[in-house]
Length: 113
Image 1 (cartoon, rainbow, N blue to C red):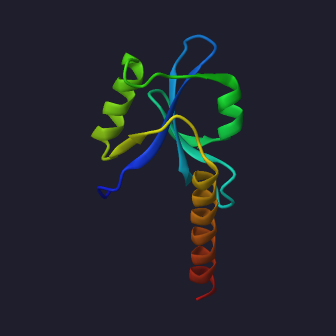
Image 2 (spheres, rainbow, N blue to C red; image 1 turned 180 degrees about the horizontal axis):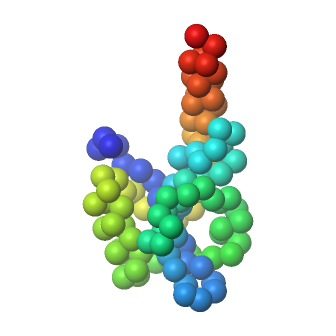
């Protein structure tokens, strides 16, 4: 990974065991960009419906939440340079969709060559 900060939204599930999930609103998890990349201690990387996760979770106060800090340390150990944000903005959505389109178009070019 490079030194470019990766925007991340930390949320906590409303149901037991109340785990923390890290959402990467600018990183697509599918070729259409509908899902963003996510990370949890158990299961690790996966795709997530951002709006669906937000509806099923509560916000995390990152600087004071120990579990979120532990998850951030785990991600930084994997090479991420994190920039925590409170929520996904329209620009972050657009960046995810644009990245997915770029990947899709370049994958199509490689297949047709």
